[in-house]
Length: 440
Picture (cartoon, rainbow, N blue to C red):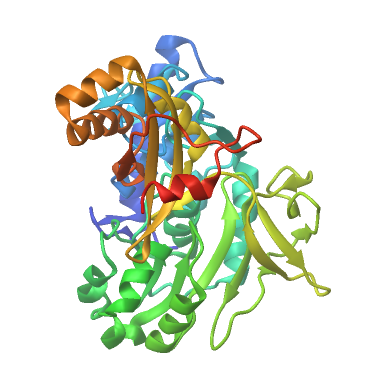
């Protein structure tokens, strides 16, 4: 790749400018490591909405063999609890390295090509629930991420004249791989994240692009597809982060005259399989080197970028004779709300810690063609006093504000009920149907 080729659109950074920024920031990290005498085990919390700045920090931290912790969101309590696990922070308004005078340029070898500064050593930890101190860390070695990238390059080649356009963030594994690392490998210029697919229109009128999106965005796009007039400029459309309804995928394939490339995987597993619906539903095709098998407790994965050991997936499925498979539903209490992964057990545990809450149950509810979260809360005596004095709306807002310290706004319960007792059956369990009846 030419050192003058653009790698980011905003700011307009060429490869040369990007590598210089990586070199400068690496010098600041080295100075910090010298001052703290911590060269090999530095744990650094990284979060930045700006994909260009994020990339500079990611590459520089990796070059210095740091263990990078990627926060799933920037909610204050999420960051606070992750900070307790780290030695340093690389956050927009709190950067431990920004005050360090970097080493002289002559002491650092500036990379001549992108591969000269490509991350190869160290680890990256993703936090899948992005919520509490019990958020589950999934740690990946860079060689695992790079091995997966090699397969993605082979499967999904792209014209270097295209640009990368994303409606998803880069702090999660899907966005990191597809919206950042894969486009960099392929020599595409990367644009900042777009809030809505229709905002891509001016860019696609000027140049061709690869769209990295999610089911939530694509579902809205299919209703009123503003990209039809520039569909010739769309090289590829990727979707992951949750299930894309077959009806939406088929509608988009008809509108855009090309199928959506759906990616199935998770933080733990990495990418597992892909498929493209053209005129009818079809099974999932595992990536090269990956094998999926049937098991009584759910599908089992064998993958070189998931530690090469059997991994029980959280989906039921049926593996066909040719190795492809069908998905038949989830096995756990993890749900997706607008592609935000939420473990209902984790949120229930956090809500139960509030002084107003004796016990609670959370459940997904279908509301006007979308899923929202409902909360059934058994109040403590203190909570009942608050309910009498403040009313339903104020109590709901107080509890939502409490949860908002740990969870993103889109994940918070929208419907609340405060029964005098939780419904139970003869086995002492709370039937889902009786909980759902509270919202009728």
